[in-house]
Image 1 (cartoon, one colour):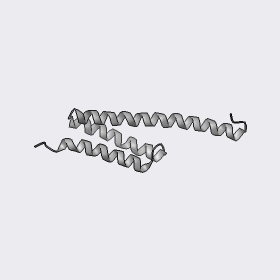
Image 2: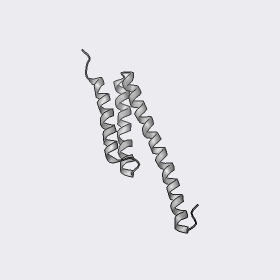
Image 3: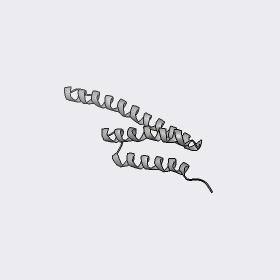
Image 4: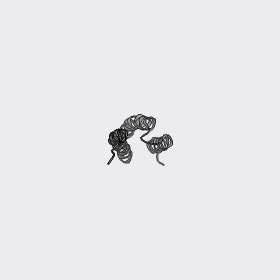
Length: 91
């Protein structure tokens, strides 16, 4: 356990940050799940809506340092590709 005043404060701050990071990551997973579900159901409208909510969430998480900038970019790109497969007619 921390004994110095500064170490106690640092411990408190890291616990608060961890809570916030866990909450943000959980939200990201939920948004990804919604996009994938809509794509699996071949519902273009709800897929684009879910993607429109997911993209800013990933950008914000990356800007806050919760996830890396390139990780956010990669995940957004892959989700967008999945949604765009619905736009291409099969045949």
